[in-house]
Amino acid sequence: MTPTKTRFGKLSGRRSESGTAAIEFALFIPFLFILLVGTVDLGFAMYEAMQVSNAVEAGMLYAAKNGWDSAGITNSVLNASSVYPGGTPALTATPAPSQFCGCPQATGIAVATCSSTCPDGSAVSQYVQVNAALNHLSILSLPGLPVPSTFTAKAVVRVN
Image (cartoon, rainbow, N blue to C red; front, side):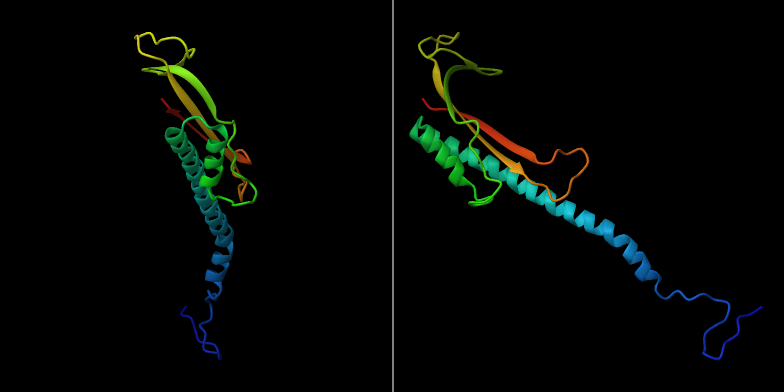
Protein backbone atom coordinates (compact mmCIF):
# COMPACT_ATOMS: atom_id res chain seq x y z
CA MET A 1 0.00 0.00 0.00
CA THR A 2 1.50 3.29 -1.04
CA PRO A 3 0.68 6.55 0.69
CA THR A 4 -1.80 8.64 -1.21
CA LYS A 5 -2.08 12.38 -1.25
CA THR A 6 -4.98 14.00 0.52
CA ARG A 7 -6.65 17.07 -0.81
CA PHE A 8 -4.31 19.30 1.26
CA GLY A 9 -1.17 17.86 -0.31
CA LYS A 10 0.06 15.83 2.70
CA LEU A 11 0.75 12.16 2.53
CA SER A 12 -1.78 10.08 4.40
CA GLY A 13 -0.46 7.43 6.78
CA ARG A 14 2.46 9.53 8.09
CA ARG A 15 2.53 11.44 11.35
CA SER A 16 3.53 15.07 11.49
CA GLU A 17 6.99 15.67 12.98
CA SER A 18 6.68 19.42 13.28
CA GLY A 19 7.26 20.55 16.88
CA THR A 20 9.44 17.59 17.88
CA ALA A 21 12.56 19.74 18.15
CA ALA A 22 10.70 22.27 20.30
CA ILE A 23 9.59 19.54 22.71
CA GLU A 24 13.12 18.10 22.93
CA PHE A 25 14.51 21.57 23.54
CA ALA A 26 11.93 22.23 26.27
CA LEU A 27 12.93 18.99 28.01
CA PHE A 28 16.65 19.83 27.77
CA ILE A 29 16.45 23.48 28.98
CA PRO A 30 16.37 22.73 32.76
CA PHE A 31 19.52 20.62 32.52
CA LEU A 32 21.25 23.26 30.44
CA PHE A 33 20.24 25.96 32.93
CA ILE A 34 21.55 23.97 35.93
CA LEU A 35 24.81 23.31 34.09
CA LEU A 36 25.23 26.99 33.25
CA VAL A 37 24.47 28.19 36.80
CA GLY A 38 26.82 25.56 38.25
CA THR A 39 29.61 26.70 35.95
CA VAL A 40 29.10 30.34 36.93
CA ASP A 41 29.04 29.41 40.64
CA LEU A 42 32.25 27.40 40.27
CA GLY A 43 33.88 30.38 38.56
CA PHE A 44 32.87 32.70 41.40
CA ALA A 45 34.19 30.21 43.95
CA MET A 46 37.56 29.97 42.19
CA TYR A 47 37.79 33.77 41.99
CA GLU A 48 37.01 34.13 45.70
CA ALA A 49 39.59 31.47 46.65
CA MET A 50 42.25 33.32 44.64
CA GLN A 51 41.29 36.61 46.32
CA VAL A 52 41.71 35.06 49.79
CA SER A 53 45.16 33.76 48.81
CA ASN A 54 46.14 37.15 47.39
CA ALA A 55 45.00 38.91 50.58
CA VAL A 56 47.16 36.62 52.73
CA GLU A 57 50.10 37.21 50.42
CA ALA A 58 49.65 40.98 50.77
CA GLY A 59 49.66 40.66 54.56
CA MET A 60 52.74 38.47 54.39
CA LEU A 61 54.58 41.00 52.20
CA TYR A 62 53.63 43.79 54.60
CA ALA A 63 55.04 41.80 57.54
CA ALA A 64 58.23 40.97 55.63
CA LYS A 65 58.80 44.62 54.77
CA ASN A 66 57.65 46.34 57.99
CA GLY A 67 58.08 43.70 60.69
CA TRP A 68 55.50 42.85 63.33
CA ASP A 69 52.55 45.28 63.28
CA SER A 70 49.25 43.51 63.92
CA ALA A 71 47.04 46.43 62.84
CA GLY A 72 49.10 47.09 59.71
CA ILE A 73 49.06 43.43 58.67
CA THR A 74 45.30 43.20 59.25
CA ASN A 75 44.66 46.36 57.21
CA SER A 76 46.90 45.06 54.44
CA VAL A 77 44.91 41.80 54.29
CA LEU A 78 41.55 43.57 54.29
CA ASN A 79 42.53 46.19 51.69
CA ALA A 80 44.19 43.73 49.31
CA SER A 81 40.98 42.18 48.05
CA SER A 82 38.02 43.67 46.29
CA VAL A 83 35.84 40.55 46.34
CA TYR A 84 32.85 42.41 47.71
CA PRO A 85 33.99 45.95 48.56
CA GLY A 86 31.95 47.06 51.55
CA GLY A 87 29.48 44.25 51.01
CA THR A 88 28.58 40.86 52.36
CA PRO A 89 30.22 38.41 52.67
CA ALA A 90 33.30 40.30 53.74
CA LEU A 91 36.88 39.11 53.74
CA THR A 92 38.15 38.81 57.30
CA ALA A 93 41.63 38.51 58.75
CA THR A 94 40.65 35.75 61.16
CA PRO A 95 42.28 34.46 63.19
CA ALA A 96 44.22 37.65 63.85
CA PRO A 97 47.89 37.77 62.81
CA SER A 98 50.18 36.18 65.36
CA GLN A 99 53.88 36.37 66.14
CA PHE A 100 55.95 33.46 67.43
CA CYS A 101 59.53 32.26 67.70
CA GLY A 102 60.73 29.01 66.21
CA CYS A 103 63.39 26.91 64.57
CA PRO A 104 63.19 25.75 60.95
CA GLN A 105 63.10 21.98 60.51
CA ALA A 106 62.51 19.60 57.62
CA THR A 107 58.87 19.10 58.69
CA GLY A 108 58.09 22.77 59.30
CA ILE A 109 58.76 25.29 62.02
CA ALA A 110 59.20 24.03 65.59
CA VAL A 111 57.89 26.59 68.07
CA ALA A 112 60.52 27.58 70.64
CA THR A 113 61.02 30.24 73.28
CA CYS A 114 62.55 33.41 71.92
CA SER A 115 65.50 33.37 74.34
CA SER A 116 66.63 29.80 73.49
CA THR A 117 68.74 28.41 70.67
CA CYS A 118 67.76 25.89 68.01
CA PRO A 119 68.93 22.24 68.24
CA ASP A 120 71.45 22.88 65.46
CA GLY A 121 72.96 25.76 67.45
CA SER A 122 71.51 28.58 65.33
CA ALA A 123 69.54 31.47 66.79
CA VAL A 124 65.78 31.26 67.12
CA SER A 125 63.94 33.31 64.48
CA GLN A 126 60.75 35.33 64.76
CA TYR A 127 57.83 34.42 62.51
CA VAL A 128 54.47 35.98 61.70
CA GLN A 129 51.42 33.96 60.73
CA VAL A 130 48.87 35.75 58.52
CA ASN A 131 45.33 34.39 58.04
CA ALA A 132 42.27 35.27 55.98
CA ALA A 133 38.79 33.81 55.56
CA LEU A 134 35.80 34.41 53.29
CA ASN A 135 32.36 32.78 53.36
CA HIS A 136 31.25 31.70 49.90
CA LEU A 137 27.53 32.03 49.28
CA SER A 138 26.65 29.45 46.65
CA ILE A 139 24.04 30.08 43.97
CA LEU A 140 22.98 26.42 43.95
CA SER A 141 23.03 23.91 46.76
CA LEU A 142 25.20 21.13 45.36
CA PRO A 143 25.31 17.69 46.94
CA GLY A 144 28.46 17.05 48.95
CA LEU A 145 29.35 20.72 49.38
CA PRO A 146 28.48 22.54 52.59
CA VAL A 147 26.52 25.76 52.18
CA PRO A 148 27.96 28.29 52.89
CA SER A 149 31.55 27.21 52.31
CA THR A 150 34.44 29.07 53.90
CA PHE A 151 37.64 29.72 52.01
CA THR A 152 40.66 30.14 54.26
CA ALA A 153 44.33 30.78 53.64
CA LYS A 154 47.33 31.17 55.89
CA ALA A 155 50.97 32.01 55.40
CA VAL A 156 53.99 32.13 57.69
CA VAL A 157 56.87 34.51 57.08
CA ARG A 158 60.16 34.98 58.93
CA VAL A 159 60.60 38.60 59.97
CA ASN A 160 64.21 38.52 61.21
